[in-house]
Length: 295
Image 1: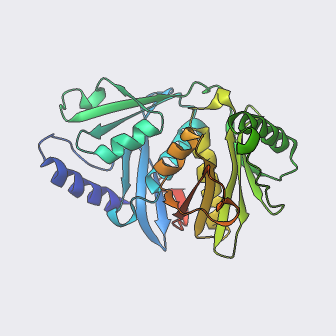
Image 2 (image 1 turned 45 degrees about the vertical axis):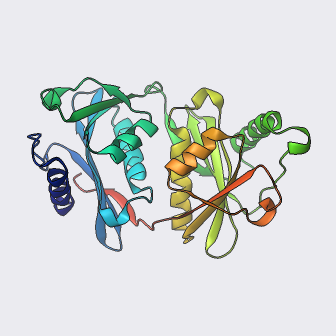
Image 3 (image 1 turned 180 degrees about the vertical axis):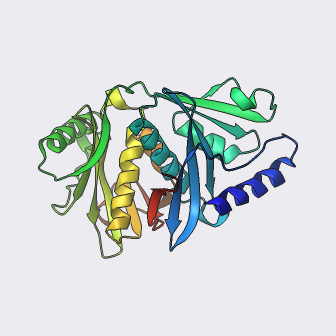
């Protein structure tokens, strides 16, 4: 883990020329998470509690060879879950103005610009962000369920109703789901808020299906948490490739998938002759663990 922080320090100093006065060091008060692949640490992040309500996300870093594959987003989601489990209601973070990729990630993940805070007040090259959890007093959980689970059935019915309004008449989209599909559901205070599934295509590939979040919970990061859980499920089931199809009238879904590292591909299987279908795929990095380095 220390090697990752050192590498981050070297990269940041090379990027800003050492002009901003930052001191990049391991903070013994922080709680670190590390992503490991093949026995090697490839990404890290840390959470530093400011007080009972507020924590700072810091030291978010992915080795260059592993970038563009969703590891930073998954690490950020893991840090958010870790913060929520500790009762923090607000997350803050800082990024250098030259770190455009990091800033884009934070904005896409629901963080909003705020005035510079704490040690960054006098750093002209700093940009600070904050994310408040409106549901901070409510329990948000992502778990695996079966297709027949009542909460899954209810969410699928709601998704079908919404799709019927977006795609009616000759544009109606009817692509059945495989009985072998495996579901993930997000609940807020025990009530279904979003879901998704993966189903096998072949021994190397699964298809993402039935991604849906209730309108009241959109913009809160639930879709990204469901997507990350499904990617973890695919990796754990030894499927290196995920494919998906979405409709051209679902711009929010398109933005989600593209920002999560999915790349456009030609229509496949049942979507070849569907004029409104857009298809994507992602080679999933087999991250073996994201675990607490300093308990």
